[in-house]
Length: 135
Image (cartoon, rainbow, N blue to C red; front, side, top):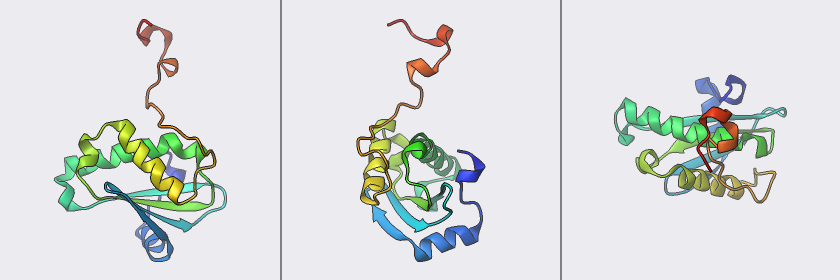
């Protein structure tokens, strides 16, 4: 995810948590607050109960990638804060994780395309010709 699309400073995280509206699922909590008009910024939080640093970082990377794939279909002008609540995020299939994120974004009315389906992180057409599997 590009730097322009990330919340980076503690004050930014604090503002979203204090002024935002919260939506929850079993794995994640999404907090949405009005932000810049020109784009969407996202932040990711993991608590120590998820495990050691390696596990927390892996959970953040997985959620960040799922959100990155959905960025083009998000309504601009908001700051999003994803708090990872469950260690199941680490082991869950990527499609289920992405479906959970889509469900939260729909609750928050942030998807511009109503029929957004989970996107594969690597589709066969995005690979170079020599790396594609045979059909």
